[in-house]
Length: 443
Image (cartoon, rainbow, N blue to C red; front, side, top):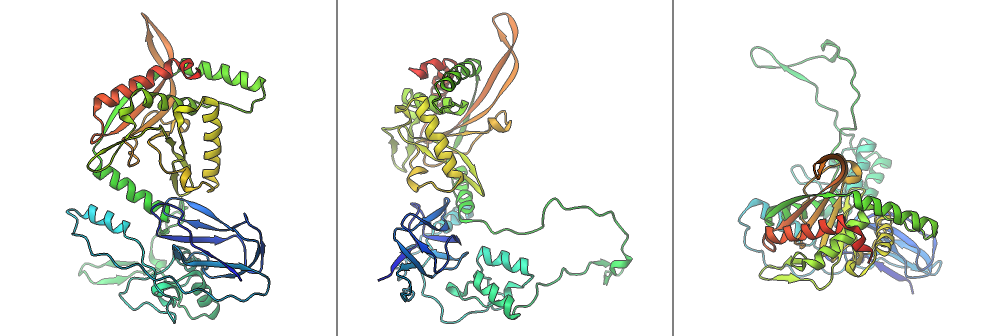
């Protein structure tokens, strides 16, 4: 009997997933552990793993389609085995509509959270009627533009008549879809305000200017939509305050150079970065000032027993924050190894949900990109986020002399519902002391 692989729940807030592309095709022999497809959730693009040995008998969802959690993606079984597509699972009972939000922004945020309903497939393809919102997957829209087809004339066979990639390809091969409309001709207004068409040949010649990029409207991915929604909610609902401090980075840079030279002699494979020291220092500062290691919980403040520091990693179409669990219990070498491994797998889209959720504090560093200082938006439900700037050579006063110093700027964004400025200042003071006396972190 064939094994059916359903759309898994790959994040805590996921209701549907977009099947970006299949990595295997029907008829391929697969083994347990092979990657079958790439699935985009509301937080990341992840690879779908096979848990069975056999032949990929049937693909039920084409690339570019959105599939509700629990609905069938493909079947794996013995060669030649026949399998029918399982019926989509029944949609959950609709909940009563909530009271209208007091502001448009709140209404938009609530709408973004509503789970997508699972519906049975349509019996026949549907063409959108004039004035009706066009339902089309991002991949199908992109493909239609590349083929020069007007999506409005393409019959959709997906849920609710949604146009999917297969519909565009079918319309292209059959020639049933109309070509995309050409840009409207330029018009100029005469003195009596009547519109007059101006022939292209009559327009004055202008020098050709190359565009910096293609003029196009790109649909947002699930990840980018979720990032946008969460950051708007954070900025609108969390009363941010900002504290800025300058740190003498010279002792840290000197110790880092000496330690890395020792690691290199020992062939340990460890090379500490400045960010490794900052993550360790943040964990120790949170242990010294535990009031910062908290979260807003509506009518209570959650105090966290463990320090789980997350750090921002830029990936295609967004960013993700892998978490170093129990950071306060790990030495610099362990933090360095784990950070590099998490960052590498984040860029390869191979993190599991458990590896990028559950952080209690976040660090974001743009110093390597030459940014001196910046203010970051809090990653809910954390009480704070630390923005790290570049280390800059600048004149500083040492005693009665003017010398060249190595200075680093740190900015703390705090949630004023959870912590006050004094608590934030205590945290930064502890952090500054550790970074200017980095040998304390080696103990």
